[in-house]
Amino acid sequence: MPDTMVATRPDTDNRAAQYDAIVIGGGISGMYMLYRLRELGMTAIVFETGTDVGGTWYWNRYPGARFDSESWTYGYSFSKELMQEWDWKEHFSPQPDTLEYLNLVADKFDLRRDMRFRSTVTAAHWDDAANQWTVTLDGGEQFRSRFLITAIGILSAHTLPAIPGRDSFRGPAYHPARWPHEPVDFRGKRVGIIGTGATAIQAIPEIAKECAQLTVFQRRPNWAAPLHNAKISKQEMEEIKSRYEEIYARCAQTSGWFIHETDRRKTMDVPPAEREAFWEKLYAEPGFGIWMGNFRDILTDETANAEISRFVAKKIRQRVKDPKVADKLIPKDHGFGTRRVPLESDYFEAFNRDNVELVDINETPIERITETGVRTSDRDHVFDILIYATGFDGVTGAFDRIDIRGPGGIRLKDVWADGPRTYLGMQPDRFPNMLMVLGPHTARGNIPRAIEHAVDFQAGLLRFVQQHGYTRVETRAEQVEDWTQTVIKASDALLSSKIDSWQTGVNRNVEGRSVRRVLGYNGHGIHFRRKCEEVIANDYRDFSFR
Ligand code: NAP
Image (cartoon, rainbow, N blue to C red; front, side, top):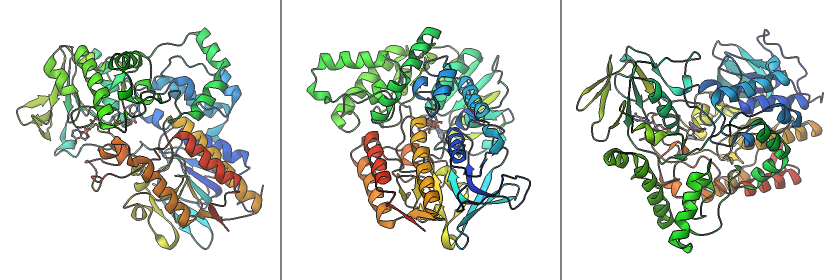
């Protein structure tokens, strides 16, 4: 073990236990980071709030929860043996199978040995003299480490609706990101769901099939397109396994690290009939093709965007029997693809059922939650179960929930008050020895692909620190400024930058979250990869070491 690292064994009983690295979060990021840290010979511990591994797939157990990435592009690629061992059962894996997969990974690499569950990190303070972090858990226990690595996800800080009386409902009320571990029995029940984002769009058709009555409270509709999920046969899985290298190489080349890539043509350059046929084809295909494999200007040009929006609106009208309901389900305040597109399975058809009612709360606003249900301006809706599918304080929310302080006691929350400042989304400005997997201002898209890329980059950086006997790595102000401007510029031309969503940092249930911010790198994935490769080739000179 290199002498710059703190050579102690993980010892969770020791109040002053010291590690080379503390990782916050036991999801896909934290699990892989632990694997890499061990490879580097570093002592490490992962703290996780949940009772087991899985992160997003541990928490989001609601009916209908599944991937919108093709399953066979989603798994870890660091172990060929693992890739050959695991069979995906569906092209878009449902949550229980994904959690099973992550449990297999944890077992196979004996990850739980260095993970502590039911452990929420409440604070992380930098000790400038010792070049170390002190990390505090919710029970008050403290740990020290040379490095602090956040693996806290971009959609982990769930938010409840800021509606009066929210806690007065007497029946069970669930947020999908805190769904019970035992199945919820909807049979014969009157169910109310608030929100029509990706989560609700997955849950609604499933719950509708089972419950007596489902009332959907919609503030703003979202554009959604068919997922076209299907089972994977044994033979098909064997064929996928034989092509993994090619599949992952493809993901590494595309804009969003999915298998889909933008069509180089411009919408209005293509004759209308050909355009329509292309869109029909995309609409009938599985996955994100309609969003990420579409003409190159649909997300930047108002006219092109209006055309694709018209097409998708037409499809919604074809699928929903009642024209008034169809009209309510068609977004008017934003164009197709300017918010992350939920992929659905029979979402629109759910509104053709007799037991599903759509309540447009712009017409009849919610006044309060009552003991028995939801009071809108025109009536009392009585429910047995309420679901708050009201989303997350995206990207920076999970950071804000931890009291992170750098040199001189500066708070990360304050430094980021006007927007994040990072280098490559890998390290926050002014916070030494803190690394972020999926930090703000990084490239995202197909999440596990982004995670593996970030963890590999950071493992390389840590190896460099080890090899040179450094004890401290931090950002350079000029590089941070340059990267921040690059990120802002990459979002400038996108229509999505002018739309409120978790991706632009807006969540009206959270104080101070009404101003749009740029929270991700929206340039081409390949540019991000090249930039990172340049930094590595230049011996990480963009960072500063001591
Ligand atoms: P979301 O997209 O932010 O949707 C939240 C919904 O709740 C919106 O319809 C919002 O309405 C509504 N809402 C919030 N507060 C409300 C209030 N006080 N009163 C009434 N309505 C309220 O959150 P999400 O559905 O959880 O999805 C978030 C992201 O998670 C997705 O974009 C996606 O990236 C990810 N996700 C992925 C999958 C997948 O397929 N793999 C599935 C689920 C989620 P407004 O729009 O009017 O604010």
